[in-house]
Length: 247
Length: 339
Ligand SMILES: Nc1ncnc2c1ncn2[C@@H]1O[C@H](COP(=O)(O)OP(=O)(O)O)[C@@H](O)[C@H]1O
Ligand SMILES: [Mg+2]
Image 1 (cartoon, each protein chain N blue to C red):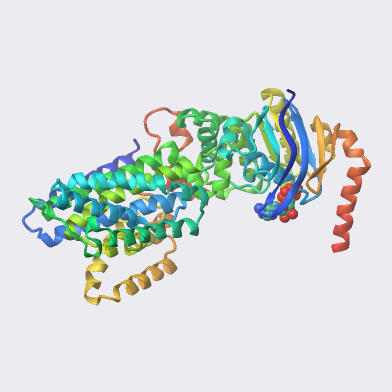
Image 2 (image 1 turned 180 degrees about the vertical axis):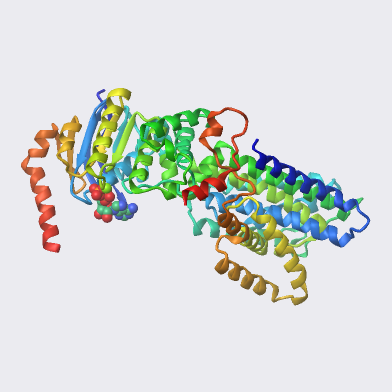
């Protein structure tokens, strides 16, 4: 079995609104799968389905060969899925350290003392050590994004779901994040699904690339080939045409 | 332990010892004991509502379920079976825990207002059942007969021990791993679930503790009162009192309910001459406090001075340095640095 994460014909959405329609794809062990697609196509929704904030109305989500479609979020985290939020959602009234401690204790199942070491390491990797005792609500956007990654790492995931962690950052910050993600893959053997807006650098940073359009996988495969394909170009052109028309 | 936390422990111990010793002085009257007893019980009631609403976001409007059940248990055990009051008290608290487990399916399905209303409806249903149940003398209520009847001093000491126990339980829960999860849930429950917090289990634990301790509290209220009727026993005013106490004191603060309970008991003593208007006056006061001090009295003071009487903050230094102290009292400093 080569896929750590597998979507099989998944339909999912919010209330009666269906966002994901017959979505199927795989993320292979130890690989980075990049995910692109126009705004509102359902990328974040796909993560919500992975972690269990929403349940598929049909189809299956398999993790490590097991059908997790009906599991609670906590159970999925215990199995090894860690996620970040596109719009950071830190525990605002807790310190940066406590934020990561929550995931090390509840996600990875450590005692508070063991968890403190995991948290220390995660804060080190993400460059937040100096800010460990600050209240998370007081952080800048960049630090909030770092905290998202640190918190997801605190759960000691096998599969890391990154939702636009580079968006809104400046060039040098993006380089840092790119390097961090590459290290997580090579040094820790994490499997990573990485949503990012079309950035040329994604081609070099990912092992496979998927483009989602209207909740359905449009194309998945070699990053270069996907990025250069006519379908992807059309989806993005279509999207920007609409934006031009709307403006 | 740091110096400031040592001072704090000494002050807390001194207050506790004083509360046990003062009643021995010849100046205390039955009436002061009665007031002290009520403050202890209302404080417990507030603490338990706060454990649910202030830390897990479960707004219960049904705390009177546990009060009424335990009150009736005491009455039935004492009057019908001639058993000592503590038998009814603990049986009532035990049944309260079972009820909270039985009601926990509501926690699965209902969020926010729906949970609140469901707990209220349950208490109203119990009121109707007890009003038509012959075994408990229907609407006629029950007198609690005990020989010897515990006097106000004895009840004061039991209630004081209960409220101290309730504080210890709350403090212990908040300092446990579940407490860490509760704090995360309070800030963002979806995100906490995505970090592995088992929300249902944490909520159920708090609901069970709340049921048990509120049950003990209800038993003592009714032993003090001497008789119980279904209407007031399962009346919403128990929860109204708890909400008032917690909102005035500061929701989600550990020590807020002390301040809230003191104010509540003195106000209701004073307002007892204005029968019928007292609820309205309490309501107006609560609204005024909410508008002026949105975090309650203790909550506002803590925010202003960056100081917590009892803190559950974890710091990296403390947890990594070993030692038993996984409680750090220096939140104030951290808060000010970050602002
Ligand atoms: N919590 C929600 N409730 C209802 N609709 C939502 C919610 N979150 C996102 N949507 C809708 O779902 C669609 C897909 O959103 P999303 O998955 O966030 O897109 P993106 O690909 O940009 O991440 C959008 O139309 C959005 O408005
Ligand atoms: Mg998105």
